[in-house]
Length: 302
Image 1: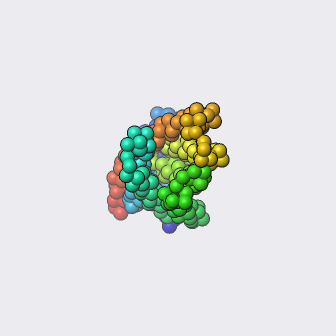
Image 2: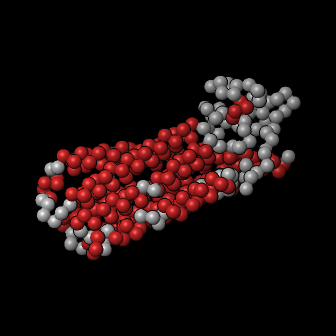
Image 3: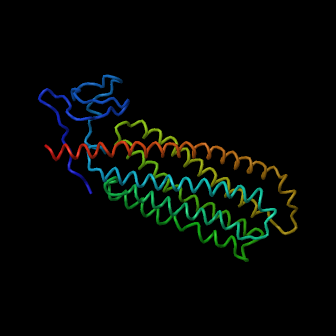
């Protein structure tokens, strides 16, 4: 739902009568001429004195944003645990464990991460935060499509018909490929988070969110492409008499494995950076909420 524009309070001399922070440096522009520049960094005051700032609206709008970001932070924490478990299981526990149910933990964790992330993404598309109805519907449809798409292939990975040989590798390749569809939702969310951050007193966080978010997105796509290529290659060359040691020393396998690990290293860096930016985003929203209450109280008094 759209809100009526808020007219900033300006006195007869054209001086701002509200606490408005410069979008570049955060300097308080109260008592600054509307047609002047920030005394600290030179950014035009008019560019900062916009009625779209979250602090100039009702507090529940900022609360919607904070709730969505909090859920995304939870999803990021669960994602880190799931990835760590998958590496520990695959490289340390798998050779010693007969009980195959342990391998379901990683995929179950991935499913939980997907559900929690979808809830957070859905929260950031609240009408108070995303006013374009068409874009809002597009993002929500993408969430509903991306969430269940990998599950049939995850289930087939443990079906007896697909549990070995080239069919297993082919199915795993499809699992990786469909899991990459979630990158579309990630793209929407990076853009939407940056748009919300632009409504904070300082807009520097919007650029920082975009940088870390797009880095995480493109490293995810890189991992999806390399993982899919590796599984498709194994599905193509697989036959029952193949020597596994020959596969391990194959130049193609070494190249794809090297790219895969490199992708994970870059992915990890952008994940940690993005996680830190989300924490900063939440702290910034925490600081905005009291300003919303103050503005609402002053509006009632006027």
